[in-house]
Image (cartoon, rainbow, N blue to C red; front, side, top):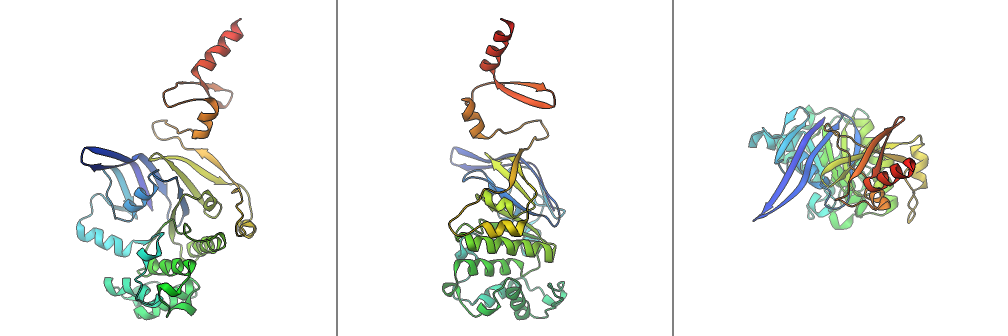
Length: 317
């Protein structure tokens, strides 16, 4: 579904250049539920904006659903944003028009695009819709909000607003759903409910879902999580054997659990690897220090150059 190769993004303001992405590589399979995790300034939101057609790379290759986003014309890019990708923001005010009801908000993408619900695949349960109102009502039912379809933004809780935003993003039957910090403004109980909803949508619709977040706990609810540091794919989180429903029940309000995953470093095509900052700090290694690399049995061992030399001298004496 997604292929990013050596992706670079540079922002220029006057004489100042900021490199947001520095040769990022990423592949996302069709139908995958995955998360992109990173701290503020890591480049994760920049990547999401480019996947959504809201920004363009400075260099590299970016393909989504077989479409080369660097070569699309303006009309083709508009159609891509209307049909291929659905987008939801962290701030509900960017997702919903406040003076419209929940149902009217979901209808809006259909009315703007002119797409006919009757030509779209049936929703789970074999629900077929012929009119925008019917599809909007069915989507709100799918996200568990059929009882709130006549309510406006101010009358909905944060979690309900995000559910409406998901229904809006699904209105035009996209192949890819992008979610920017969808749980950033809700409590832990609502976070659990939203992540379970993403799991259900992924399974029922076969939808590819990419969630961008700073919360590593999300990695416990997705099939794969990729960590981005300083504009590069740094590591992936691999889930250990665990009962997902049992894990979700442990996430009570005000209580954080360590996700049952392990973090594995990613080696790029050039053999480069990013080491976690906490590992380097533990060894007293700064950005200017050198490391000695050697093979030891089936392991690659990194040692500060000075320490390695001291060990050699001690062995010889």
